Length: 315
Length: 294
Image 1 (cartoon, each protein chain N blue to C red):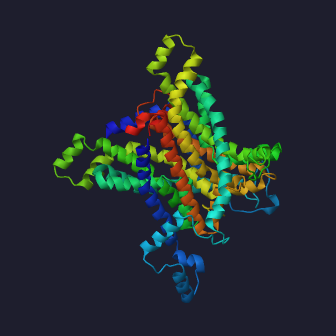
Image 2: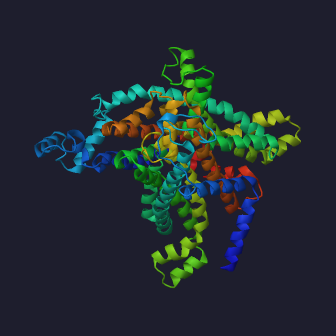
Image 3: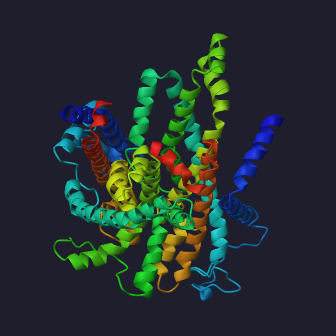
């Protein structure tokens, strides 16, 4: 297990290396480069020279990169141009909101998708299967931002049950208020993911249903409930865990648009603001953090997978 | 030639035996017709009429009017142009860059394969929308930037599908024969392997079109894509969201057209994928198995 873990971590190194170079180089790809970003487009030559020296841009590129990576590793992602606050602090303020949203969305997605998948897998080709499978197609085709708008129209504008703009309230401080505020964005994201999860789980359930051990179990006269609950689910859940893990990482992407729809103060909306104000240190910091989280989740999923199915380690 | 024409006709007949595909083709056909002939058909998306701003749907304004009194239906029709042109451009960029990457990686293998595929892995390390946003941070906002950004996010899928196709053809007799007769690597790749790889690449292009339309709309919704006064669906939803109380239809109707367009491309793409993989008998959701194998 340990050697597998080390091997997987070593595989991440080149990807992280290329990604960090790409993110670092972003500054230099911007018109005018990093200096223009600080002093503006129409600065005098003296100002440009001073800023170049101050930022250390007269040093060799490789030194500048090493410097940037060194700072990033020690937790210093620079200061936001716009608010002058450290990037790490700004990200730290927003990250919990996005994580809470992701967890709520995942719960909703599981609650919707698991029953749909089981019912349609047990009745393949029937009308109920077709109806439930259309749910998946629809859930995937409806753009999240439009679904969010529709939910606001229904629950906030028409019924007035829930707020149209969602604030972040940590769950442990006020559970009910937190749920009121997170429910609509979480439902928006959850519906989309439920489409993917239901499709996937249905396919792996159908695959399991055709296998030999199910035929044996049936011929033994085991009740259908026990076959599905005890045998099939256990096997079908293994690949499902992977997909759920990958979805958790994908919430980071989907949450950008959803957070904007509901003006929810998460990491995604911070990124949108950073791009609008051309706040490059902040943009770099957020993207780096998201890539690292993405990789850690993937790593965790792989480890979990190897734990559930020990054959993986030896591949 | 005649044979390929017959097989193409047979493919189309088979695809059209699915109701979803027929609806999708009709919907996209009608939408394209309106978008292409919008000028002749008398759609006017620019004229402002402040007295009649935010009017609900009526006989005169089928989709109502926006905050400047412009006809929303006309803007949806012209928005179709923006959406289809941007996504077609994006898919083209993705194919033109992604297919050669896949060809070279699959054909040569070795370090070229390793390097190219690592780069592709990095591109997949970020969800597409975040990747596109990062690119827009560099390129600046606008329709062209959105097209390029969405196009670049599509490179990995073309690279992977082409690479897989090359690997399956690499050691076939007709490829070996070309090499034995002294054909160059370029000739083998572009004149021998590529012509036999078009079907999955075309299918991928259609699947990607639905993704590109969604991404473009999302970027415009975030205010990073097409800028006003050019009409785009994403931008209309962005503005419509500010008038949910006064004019709920504003953000609803363009969204329906957007969703149907994405659904149509996706339906056609899925049906073609099923067909390519020889599963046109199994029903609509059989392509899920393919997804789980990826």
